[in-house]
Length: 318
Image 1 (cartoon, helix red, strand yellow):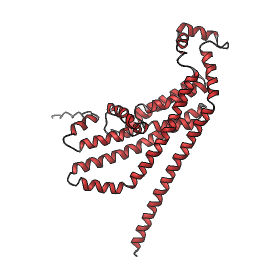
Image 2 (cartoon, helix red, strand yellow):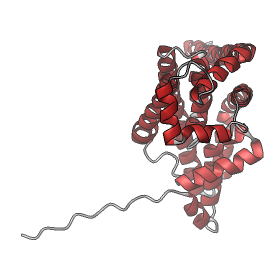
Image 3 (tube, rainbow, N blue to C red):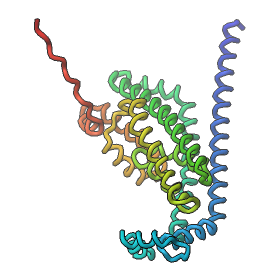
Image 4 (cartoon, rainbow, N blue to C red):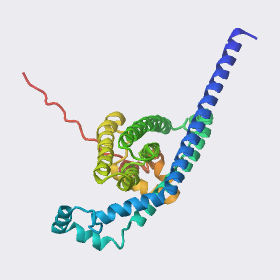
């Protein structure tokens, strides 16, 4: 046995143990996060009666049914017409209804964690087969260089998209966790994890993530503090979604905004929450498949985003 053989064997063993350690760490982190989220949801369910009683007191005080309500506030609400509007809607929206909505939303978050776990396990198996998969692609596309170029471009773009999107979503989750912790909202880790996960869903994910936290802030805290929670979500998502993400991601995967939104509906209808999380990669796979054939390249162009044409500089004559 030569020294090169032992060095190569040592390198392979190191790679194996690194991959094994990263896999165990990833699965352990998911299980730990899932258990924390599950315990938070169970704790919220146990305190539902307390939250409902607290919300009922605020609800009664706001519409003027509580004797402790300020007379100036009552008269102001009467003049503006808010009190009458709330009384008319009180039969449809009650404190118990809001608590039930919040509980259902938090239950949906738990199911999202289960789907995320299955998706990541699937990705681990895909990564283990990546070497053989690349070899198969080389064999299949040896007579079609354009197909190989398209697939390589797709894999590179997808890897970049997932990596950057994960980093941006992680930053969003950390900021939300710190913000709601400073405001004293219960279960800050849960809201940070919700913001992290749902940020993978384009367009509507960040909006959905804010709803249960704002509802709980209305129940647990005051109306001004609930407004601060909402402002925190708006500012964070605006900075991340409109400034940081476009600069970091660039053109992304080249899908138009309308196609991304419609893909959320389509893949969500087929696969549920998991389909919404994977809407962009799945749609990009369809786009690459359409680009691989000259007969379907026009359809692929319809899925892509239109890039603005660069203005040519006018030639100056001396």
